[in-house]
Image (tube, rainbow, N blue to C red; front, side, top):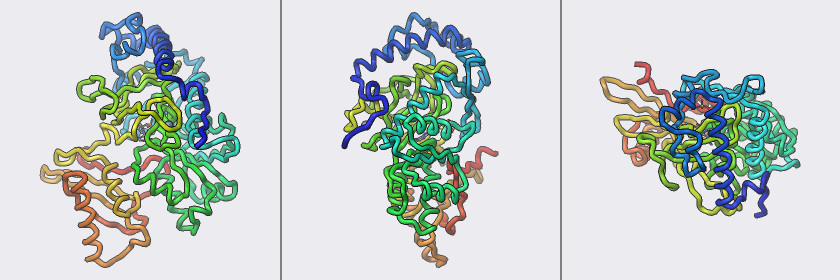
Length: 435
Ligand code: ADP
Ligand code: ZN
């Protein structure tokens, strides 16, 4: 398959050259941070590291980590690397884990971020012939702004829909022949469900590709979205702290996301000891931003759990690939001592023919964790025969027991009774935290 690249030189750069480029940028960036960000200078001083000690990426491990707690401590201006009058934009995290972070951008930062998103759109087959429907939320959230900017750079005809108002999304998609859609995977599933209800078949829908990210989603969910919308569904990853979406993006191989390594160095560490782990090992993802001026984070711990791979990719890109993050350290539920990720439940549901409409409810009663999974039946699965429902709940609970090692109570609920999400889905209600 012919490959298109947005910035071919860097996307296919030989590894040695890339290492050299990263090394040069790192030396400069560490100096910039040390001179301009007092908060990080203190961390370096405490660790006894000086900018001169960093001569290239092999010295990266000498630098201190930065965590979400540091970002909270330094809120709002403590990590600024440029005077405010050189900054042009602020974005903020969606606060999934309850702690908002604000990030600052110079025009240079915005430009590079949009380039990263443009690479993702081109890798998904986008060009100036496409109509790109941006259905991520616009505003403080980075999803809308990032893909909007990337779409402009590629020269797509951009439909700045933002999220929500699904009726209107569908009307514009159909009337204006949207060929690419960008949104969260849960919203894509919701739009797909609505299209199906309105009687559209995959072949009636003008879309050819979707670029979905901002939350964890499984391979099974990808298949589900691809089948309903009749598209190829590409993953995209990023976080506000590192600009937004576009830190990594998927190519036609759809086997993980290429990290934009000319702008970001990725490392995997052991979340308990901080030790750097070799490629292929699962651990916490850490990013160093090489070009960001206004909010230049070094060795930022994302809490996302992931694996890196340097296997050759059929698309010709030489950029390292990150697997789908399987959740974050703070998404992981420990239920009766067992680690449970919502993504494992999603895999079971989709394998058993259910839609990805579910919610996990955890509570603690008499010192024991309760573990309930509410699962919606699709309209065609609906039944009110109690014995049938009980048998299906039992089968699902057994399949989850095999996957997780512990037994949930599964409750099948009527179609459309679990709230849909237009942004990031709320998969877990953990009532234990309220005690
Ligand atoms: P918040 O931490 O409030 O959700 P952001 O909106 O910046 O803030 O979201 C960034 C986080 O979203 C990432 O750290 C990661 O956990 C998640 N995320 C983003 N893209 C993906 C993706 N493609 N797959 C899985 N998780 C993702
Ligand atoms: Zn590739």
